[in-house]
Length: 490
Image (tube, rainbow, N blue to C red; front, side, top):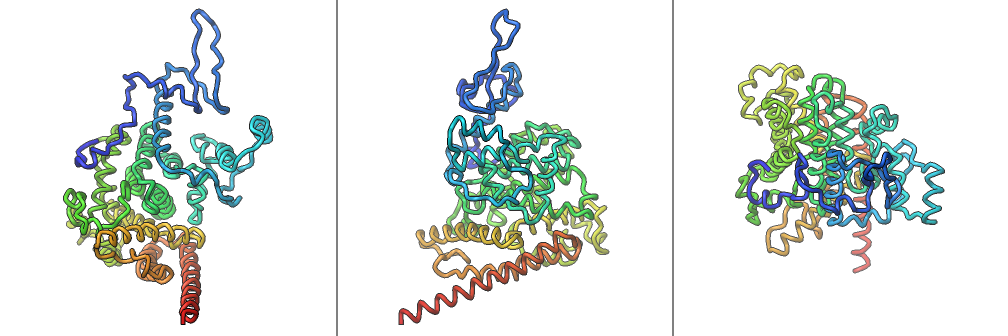
């Protein structure tokens, strides 16, 4: 995979086939109980044998169709990888509100009768899986489907329940959201992207996120990508972005935390991680994400058909945006972004010469200014959890604190100094969230809203106000409970 470091290359997945299909497909890939079965011709017979499916809903294909075989093989390889992960959470799915996806999620009467006639009883996981095939998630490929349009509308809603989307997509939200975004913005048609290579890129990207991380996993990447889509879909920005810039921006959002180890920069430095030797002590994780992403881009070949100049522009946009997510330099970026956009260009040494020419304000006809906007959008999307509805905000907080506390436990075990917000015995979660909103989230979104006010920014402001009140109420309850416990002990 390109020029990636040896420590990354050693972990290179060997489960994906490479086109053209010049090697024999393993028998298990065609025998496995799955959604696709082959057809065969009897010698001298004008008819085709009817395929015998082991499962309802099978799709028939001719085994001489190399593309269909490739899709079948790829699907089987990914399925094998997913079995290695713990997806037990989908065995007993919680109730999903009916308004999560507004498209019809009811099973057709015929399908209900068929399922009950065969099994008699349908478990929750099977029920949701069956419903999934009648929602936009599995029909986003239809060019004129009303469900496709409905999905496009939903992913542009800031209050979209991504956690519910993760459950009904069986733990593959980034893959399905990515397909939907590529189709919604017509990138496949405009840039002549190969659909199989896009699918390969999305599958690889989701695979390389560590499912064991409570927070920095594929679901977080999907959340950030959806938030970025909402922010840059503002008409003032969207009409100025080129297709190459859109592609680079979405790729950056999808890979911005790829192969995240679940610990922060401080831990890597204090534990003498090999990553610090490879990428240096500054922006170690962000550099690692960029190198890993470039390997996946090369492996999938998603932009291999573009001209060298366009390929370089895509990867340059990705690099700039991903490096801007380094939270250790957040204050520097905020201070720079306060004066749109002249001083923010100082973060890119290649653009220093333009600094004097853009002192008169934001000019979206200037590519360097558009890059500034994309970097700001990704930074906002990366810290957007407190701007979501309270129920979703609280779940994200629980996930990120679990990851922080896990790092603190590791540091305690290794007799290292415990990093900020990582001590489970000392952190006041409501207070820490209030501080995060006050000093990090609000200033960043204020910069964005000042230049790109929209219905989305109004929703964000309302959610922030409500969530701050909720955290304050939880803090008062926690303080009251602590006081009561102290009195009881006395």
